[in-house]
Image 1 (tube, one colour):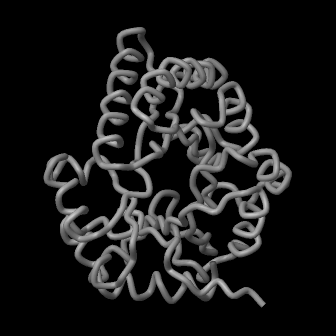
Image 2 (cartoon, rainbow, N blue to C red; image 1 turned 135 degrees about the horizontal axis):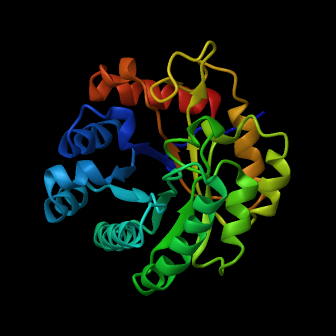
Length: 273
């Protein structure tokens, strides 16, 4: 019997309550006694970096990660430099907020050359590593489901993410395992084992059938077909004892109050994670 009944590892990924401001999301976490929050840069920008840091500290919360860096590929050298500059700002923000991990959503190809775009991702991460290391920030490469290859990321399997991460020291670059993006992969459990020591984040949601929307169709844990608990056991067997972020893009869940959303998250976390 799985006795996973504690909330000490639970983190609310802010996108799950997208309609809430940062102060509202923090207040909801505090009321629900959820100790961690994963921040999105656009929400931090709305409240301001210094104010966001103060609000989180005053509520007694801690930051599990910052999303997102990445989006490295661009059609021109100047464009790629601009992306790198933005990633350095993201590193600065993560350090200021006390997040040890910057999640990298690596970006799509600017044209039809997907292999070239993947090379741009590798080069972008290589250029970012020294800056991130100097700030004490680890880079977590999050592979996205292949259906996002054209518009969000050309890194689409955990094997691809591992290939890049292994070019660097474990203290610098790792991977983020999001069940929504990797559950389908026949090589998943081999690649999770391969990532031992490099898993920097674990994100949970569910895959609804039929899938209502490519972006906004994630389900609350238990509403779909993913074997979430088996994947959790695998990442733990690979040495991951870190935080578990609930990250759900779903307009119906966004319409819930913060209190109702957190209550549902906690119930499903215990039952299905």
